Every structure is written in structure tokens, then in C-alpha cells.
Image (cartoon, rainbow over all chains, first blue to last red; front, side, top):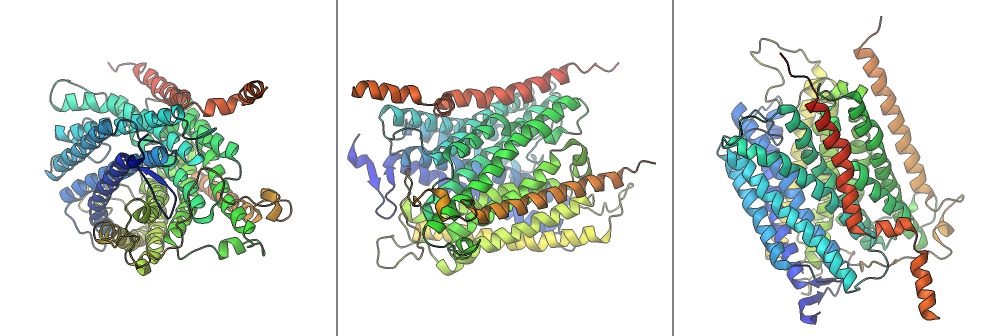
Length: 570
Length: 53
């Protein structure tokens, strides 16, 4: 192991393998580029679905919606996740990255794939949405771009697995891999299944688009495509939960309440999370109720259980760390005196709450076969996944980026005053956006439709006036969130390319360059429960969890009541 | 004596922890579970739909 191949960050103590560091930087920068392109699409799509504005003509709307979906849900997130995989393996395990040259090949394939796919969409003959359901044809380059990207990402996954093997062989860590790396391993495993499923369906679809195959069965396509389409969002879930644990350690020096419980929760993700793909097919006639109910209402609940475990243990570990530092008054002093002006923490905490309360609860509603019918294929669905993938994943990645700019890129974060507010603008903007979408969806407003009014249609539909109000709120809050996203992109790009080096005189403003280590940083005297109350190690978190469960039960019951009113029995 | 105690340490690692420490076993589980319960079961249901006359 050559010492000059490694760099130790003086602030954080993190050790970077230089070839891995260059790959992380390349993936992070590329992902931000596609976040920017997808973000422009987000603004234009939002302004079109806002009935009072209705900006784009129909053809442009579907073109931009396709670009927005693929760039955000596939390209931005998975590219950033490959950077996270390299960070969690090479950096956290203090190990050289396996086969950097092959990793660069993977990056090149991803880049080519992203460009080829985007050019196909911009050309105007691939406005087929991210799902690209057959028999609706797209330009062959649309599928080819996705296939190239998937192969590149798969290479990244195996480079990550290879790095784990090297770390074990070279004994760069003792015992089990750190929990954050285990979370990244979970994301990697889900990614392998996801990408393999994508290859199984997209390669024949590509051959169909160039005329080598006559027919692709639409039911079969939907089944296998959703193993790609929904599981790719499960990669995000596993990755952002790992980021939550990392940020709890970075900002608070928190150690997990129980490594065993957290690892078991990640294991539940590995075994069951991908099965939730089935909720997209709950009204498909070719599949039995047994298949639907097993995959959603049974298996998916085990994954939901895992998310609730993480949702309890991450804030719980923060509470224990805060109480160990003396913030023991009442139930919530630890939370009141948390560093709310630090975007690394505030972004992560809004991500956690938004993912759980909005994305998690609505996900269970959508995964229940009976009540799913109320909102199936309405704008409730994008409301749900914007809560999970945008508030949950994107905001968590933004928070991590504010940590990586000084540690990985060695640059100060510019405009710290603006950055302080960015997670609030983005997170609360998206929270209102998703809730308004869910309100509109519950009233029947359809997803992916250019004109909710069905102007000039032979079969119109009279929505209640509140549906239009909800869509107006979607427009306003969506625009606010886009401004929050634009601030992130602006700050990130300017800091990385034009920012002052970290070791120059000007301080970079944040107080979070705590050492990120695999071993515990804050160990409460007398154990976890010593600083708690009433026999609970984290009583404030416990109360928040009870509040969450009450909201969960009330909303679940309301949906069953609503279903009963939709289908009256007389 | 030291060798004996280190062997005891290895033996005492719980089976669940050994499983969670094996990334390739986890990869196998993470691919096979959804492949069987979601994809293969789903394909079997679709291919057994009678063809319309």
C-alpha cells in the first residue's frame, strides 16, 4: 500500500485513496449536472400542471416530463450513489479502491448513456415517460442510453464489492464493516437486482425498437420493468438511510442505539424492499390477488418495519449523544438545541421527518390493495414518491454534499448565509408540494396529464373546485422548491470550481468537521439509558415515534372510511 | 493458549452476524428473494393466462 496514493483530510480525519477520490469527484459533478437538467424540467412541468399558468404545449410537456423523470429518478440519484458507494468502501474502510481503471470505464459508460438518452428525448421522438410502456415506441437511442448507463452503474457496484473484498483481505478494519458501509452494501445489492431486471427487459425492448423482435407482451413488460423502475427508488432509500447514520455521526458523534437492530433492519431491506414494486401492478388484470397481496401487504410491511426502525434509531442515537453532552432538560432540549442553522443537520432531519411522515405513510396506503384503488395512477403517486425520493433522498444527498465540499473537494462552501436556509426552502417547499399533490390525487386528479380540465374532450370530468386549488398550491410550492434546488446547484458549482481552499484564512462557516470514524465517538457514561428518562434511553424520540404511529393509524382508518364512501353498499 | 482463545472468539460469532458479514451471501439473498417472489411468480401467472380466441 503506497502512502502517496492516500490523502488524510486534516479536518475530518477521513482517509481518501486518490484514484477513488477522483472517481468520487467525477461522479458527484456529473450527478449535479443531471440534477440541474432535471431541475429545469421540474420547473417547466410544474408550471404546466399549475392550471392558472399551463405553460407548455402538450408535446413539450410530455417531452420535458420524460426528461425530468429519467434525469432525476435514474441519472442524478444513481450517479451520486456510485460516489457514495466509493466513499463508503474506500474512504470509510481506509482501503484502496478495486480496479480504478474499470471504475472509470463504468463512469464513461454511464456518461455516454446519459448523453445518448437525453439527446433522444430532446430530439422529440422519445416522449414516452420514464416507464416507456410498450407498445408505445421510442427512438432506439432512448433504450440504448439506459442500457449503457445500467452497465456502467453495474460496474460501479462490482467495484464496490471488490473493494470490500480487498479491505477484508488487507485487514483495513476489524470485525464487521461499519454500519454506514453496511447501508451502502444494502443499496449496492438492491442496485444489482434492479439493473439486472432493467437489462432483462430493456435489451429486448431495444431490439424490438430496431425491428429484430416483433412483439413485447405489455403485461410482461410492466412486470419486469417495475423491478427496475421501483427498485431503483429502493436503492435511494437504502443509500439515504446510510447517509442519515453518517450525518448523525458527523454532526453529533452519535453511535447507533443498537448495531444489531440497525443491521437487521438493513437485512429486511435486502430481502423484501424490492417486492414493493408490485404496488404499481395492483390493478393489472393478469396477476392474482395472492401475488399482489404477498408482495405488497405482507412482504412490503417487513420493509416498512425496517424503515420505522431506522426512523427511530437515527434520531434516537442523536438524542442519546446530545443527552450525553448535558442537554438533558425535559423531553426535547436535545432537539431544540440541535444545530438548526447547520444545513448538514437541518437537511438530514427534514429528510428523515418528510420521508417518514409523508413518504412512508402514503407508501403503505398505496401498498394496500383495497385502498390503493382510491388513488391508483392519480397524482397522489408522484406526491408519494416526491416525498420519498426528493425530500428523503435528494435532501439527504444535498446535506452530505455540504460536508463533502470541504472534505472531498477541499473548498469552502460559498454563501453560508444562503446555504443555511436552503434545506428549509427546498424541504418545506417539497413537503407542501407533495401534500397538495396527494390532496389533488385523492380528489381524482390524474398523473402525467397535460390538461386536468380535459378541455374539448368528449368525456370530461368535473373536479371539485378544491382540486384546482390543490394544483395551484402544487405550482407555487413546486416553484419554491425548485428555487431551493437551484440555490443548492449554484452554491455547489461555485464552491467546487471557484471556492476558496479550505486551508485559506477565511473560515468556511460550518462547525461540523467532526471526525467521522467507524468506532463510536460519543459513549455515554453508564450506557445509552443513563442520560434518559423514565427508563427510556431516548424518551423524546419515543414520544415522536408514538406521535408518528397515531398519525399513521388515523390516516389509515380515514382511507378505509373513504373507500367505504366511494363504494357504498346498500 | 492465545491461539486457543482466539479460536474460541471465532466460534462464538453468532450465525446471524456471520451471515450479515458475508456480502456475497447477502447479494445472493437480495437477488433470489425478489427474483422468485416478484419476477418468476409473476411471469408464471402471466404465461398461464389463456389466449383469447
